[in-house]
Image 1 (tube, helix red, strand yellow):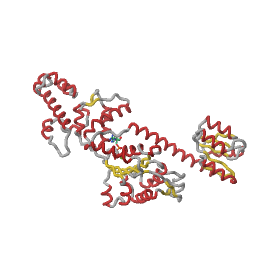
Image 2 (tube, rainbow, N blue to C red):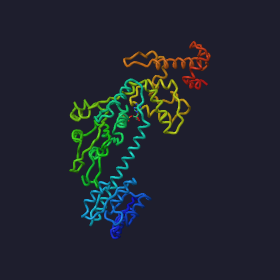
Image 3 (cartoon, rainbow, N blue to C red):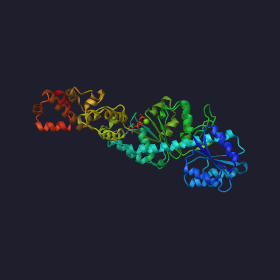
Image 4 (cartoon, rainbow, N blue to C red):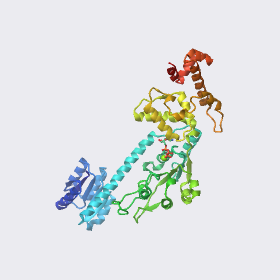
Length: 464
Ligand SMILES: Nc1ncnc2c1ncn2[C@@H]1O[C@H](COP(=O)(O)OP(=O)(O)OP(=O)(O)O)[C@@H](O)[C@H]1O
Ligand SMILES: [Mg+2]
């Protein structure tokens, strides 16, 4: 139940408000002067304060000053006689949320309270979100040593502390959101909020009010005024994800905000100015969408001030082991599990996979492997079928390994070849290691060492 504190020296007003608000489902506590009211505020938690301005002794303004200096976080609504409206305006400068004039209509008091509670809920949510994102970012770093990724990181460093709009493109799961957060948290806007909005996930008819907010009564169901993501992101960054899905009518409205830096809430007439940096992302080819006429050309150029393209994982094969190591540590910590090791053979299957789902697919795979793992090592048997397409035809694999224009990682190829040969030798010699060793021109201890290093142990198991 939400709790309201009323501080007013007039007993009749205290009683009237208390009865009315109790009837509306609030828990109401009253105080007859500023000092005792303040004591209650310091000792107890309230969601809202109704504060009379004119009181003998400590008046409403004094109470507000004290609230500010004690850093008590509570929305306050001032109650004032019509004659002292100018003081009420002063009070709002001191941080009061709203004021109502005496004599008042009870229903107006109720509405003012609902509005204040709604805004304070949003602010709380905002600060919770902010904390969460900060936390997330500190554990989410961009990992990768490959040339394409190093270029991306250098580029981010260069552009982070500008205010320019960035358009992040790349296939699904390549890290577009991670990059957007990294830009925000490495910019002077880091102290304000990073507000994400997925344009594809929110139904078209409510997206406009999500973006710009709405005034009370703007449409059926708009019982209170709500601020939108643009206002929430003021002084911060607004991340417009899947921008390619934005409906044409909203494309026009977004274009205007980008040009003028101002807008109106849905159903509102007041023009609201904001200072927001936009980072947009899409996995669609926007240039093609412009040609097809589904995306406005002028909006495209407004968004594409700084284009940033993220490479797919299959172009950064050398980063696969690094990413695996990173996710093993992160996910094991999160799941409170012992981090497993990955055998060489498993690693070579993973490095040579095409990764249609990119880093997200890799992250999900590692999570699944950690949950399902049986021993200390993750062996190829534990990988889903699609990773093992060439598993039982080692000869064909090695023969067909022609150098393609994309290039190969020679170490991975050699490692794979070595694995295959060892496994074949073990198969031919039915697991007798000295026989297998002589087939390979190795002595027995060297073979055993290699098997250990590559964690080839499942084969002896099958033989026995
Ligand atoms: N280079 C990287 N280093 C570490 N983690 C990464 C990297 N790239 C992506 N990730 C992680 O992979 C997951 C997917 O990334 P993200 O959500 O940013 O991708 P996206 O491009 O926005 O995908 P989608 O288009 O599907 O929305 C996230 O958990 C992210 O932290
Ligand atoms: Mg995304």
